[in-house]
Image 1 (cartoon, one colour):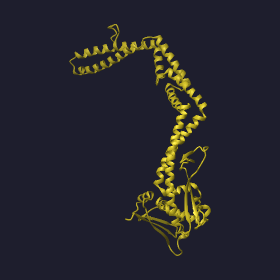
Image 2 (cartoon, one colour):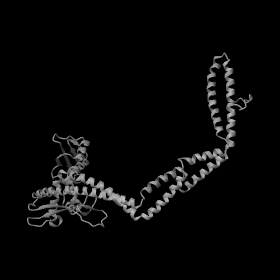
Image 3 (cartoon, helix red, strand yellow):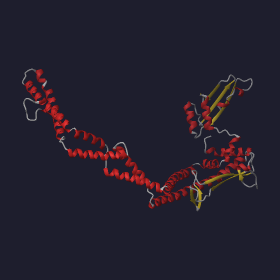
Image 4 (tube, helix red, strand yellow):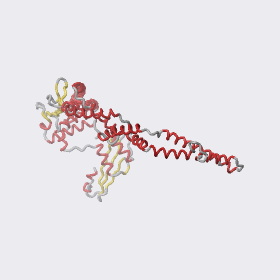
Length: 430
């Protein structure tokens, strides 16, 4: 371990101290990744040799699989493969959650699968319970909020705004209010391009002038001048298109006081909405969508509450089924684990000691917000199931089984913890 690399560890009269070990990687993905990243060589049996050397001058060297590596690499590898057991570790056994975790780690997938299903259903069940409580206790407040939202939606639906309509109306009003100026500008531009509407030869327009230029060049025998003809034709086509668009624009500029009044009235309707609900029409429409979504969760009618209660009860039944399967898996694992721990303790100077593991459901009353009925009994449905797990120790034959922290001394607790770690070796990589 990097923290223990002290010069004092070097024997007097020697130049270096060496620590060497062979580690079997097995299925430890983290350890395998560390070895691979370091470029270390793994032996044919899947093991790797690690070496640490400390010299009397304080310098330290580390090798892994024949390769020189930073000391930190060995520290990272040891965390993946070695569990350091000390006397303080037995304090973990005093926590009920840790005792339940021991069984779950030992059981592996037999517990993991039903526990995941239990937690998924429990999350949905809790959400329905919370929503039902919310609707029941805040029914008057939610009804008032729903009335306000409903009034707003009625007002918005009566106007029926379209996305971006306020911007379009602003542009339309500008055109209608300035129709005379716009008509004069467009008419002058149209005459300059297409000529006088009455065909005045003195005002031929750009198209007429280009036509005259084309006729003049077409009669020339000079090749350079004749080559300019197609370019004039292109200009003529472009001006014809511009003239047509100006003509179309003029047709849409008929003065219509009634239309302007109608558009102004529509704009006033939209402004009433934007003053109350959002800065623009798009914001008003977004408010309406959000209001409809919120109203869908504010139904406090007896029918809605009954439907929620039905869903709650259905989920409770499903949850109880998963809780029962989880309990059965833990009970089966508890018997196997207790037997295995007892066997290990016989080699730790506790030959007469025997471990028992109980798995019991915590009975509660209806006041428990997380109560669910399993096999006719109301029990607490916690995040890890409905089970309370307890390790009991029978110190010798004839002794009653007692909670392990009451029946064992500090040293015995440490040995029990060590026995558990040995048994759990198949569930952990350390």
